[in-house]
Image 1 (cartoon, one colour):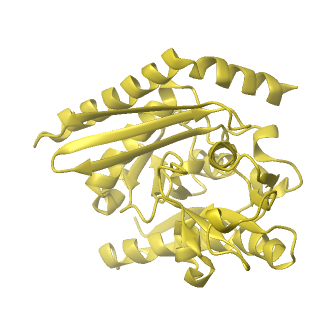
Image 2: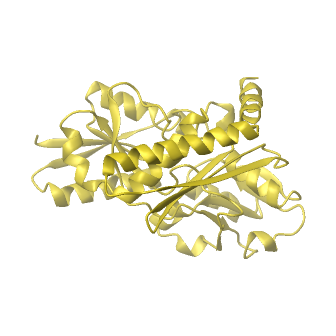
Length: 316
């Protein structure tokens, strides 16, 4: 193989991610000519509607996957939180990269933290997950939909449209916008999205898989598999009020899952854990079972009714 083509979206953050993977692959395979194929996705085109209302599955990945399946591209680089739980036949996640910060960042020009916001302050976010948890913590806030790339969102904040906005901390850090992070929201207030902070490389299930395998970070992969197993069992997409966060500590894999109503009045929380061994295959099975167990308990507590009502509302 002489040339490798990476499919990517055209946003500054997506291009940073694609170039990051390109550079890492170039170190491993200096003989390769690595090129980028820049594409526009449905999620990039429709910017005047909340994501949840235009369908949360595959909004930012479908066009990239089409390029993979047609052979136009060899790999695609994604923010894992944007990747649906079920991939098209023939495609796999070939590598989960070392996870960057999974947390949400509070950005504001006038207030230092979420607690400093006055009653009725306007907060922008594109995520039902964030909206749900913010309303549960601060019911008085006015949560307003915020779409666009990172620069566009910050521009709306600077224009005075919002008192604060919430974004993925990893995105701001990757774009070297550390100074815009006033506060990192702790997990007890705003549990991260499934896979948040993790870059995933999607590919065909062929020789490309072996080529990118060295980029896989085993611990990040195990955490991602755990979180995605929970989300898959809940039949949740990336634009529903579901949060999942796995951590590995001293040989024990912990998972917390949350499902809530967008108004924040109901917020279900479940935690569980499992032991990790020296057997990689067994660890993946344990991780998947842990995710499924947390999902089952959330469903028992009423998550199915919350999600069913939400999907019906979106369809209407």
